[in-house]
Length: 145
Image 1 (cartoon, rainbow, N blue to C red):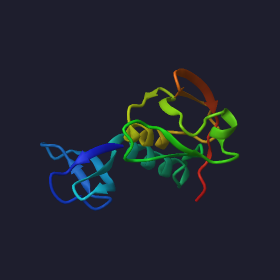
Image 2 (image 1 turned 90 degrees about the horizontal axis):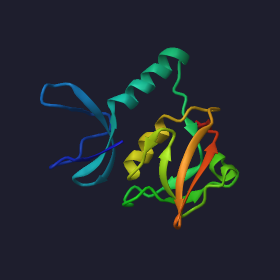
Image 3 (image 1 turned 45 degrees about the horizontal axis):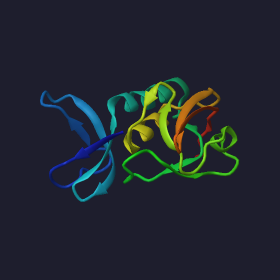
Image 4 (image 1 turned 30 degrees about the vertical axis):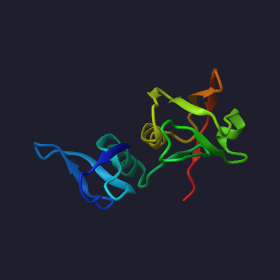
């Protein structure tokens, strides 16, 4: 996801964000406050379109983590009991550093990485726990409807 400062009213979810040449770069997704929000980059939209064209539906992986959108770093606030993340050893308070090949610096990076999780495909997740960095393998489940 991209954090967007609109400089005015936030666009409605689904509205395109275009560059100076009129190319769609992202799609508005979630409001954070009256002047900013998150948008889905075109690569995420392409992933959704590809899933629908191949299988008739969007297939998203779920690993059972909750984060706060307003946090400065992508810190885990809750790990759902019995989730793939819980089974892999991720804990509340861990700071996500990488999911797969994606380096994470903030909530938007983590949310973007979540869109690319594939059910059943083991994914390396690197976290900072206190002063230690730990890597675990998480196997996402099909996200419930």
